[in-house]
Image (tube, rainbow, N blue to C red):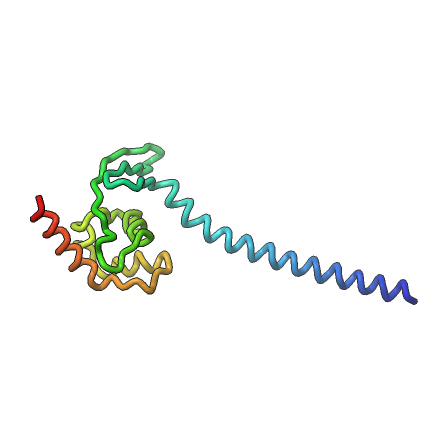
Length: 139
């Protein structure tokens, strides 16, 4: 009788461990898949160095085209930090002029793709136009 009780306990314990490990495995694969899909796309198509003058590699029909891009320090704009500057660069916004000509709606779409909903881009184009004007006056 005691052996039957022990075997039932071990059976239920095995079922519990099997089901819980399966659930954890599925959750792990789902979260890992979401992380890979965004970073793989960016790593495959865009490579940006951290200096002011960068080389960008763009993949077109299995060919890589190199072009030199002069970048402004977009972190000078209030509300833009290193992460948002990198995100803007990934979306081909490198200069104050690029940022100034981008609509607020497009900036919000770019931020929403990375779940950066706390950032407020409403004043960024105006600030960028002013920064561009200041940059041109200094030269």
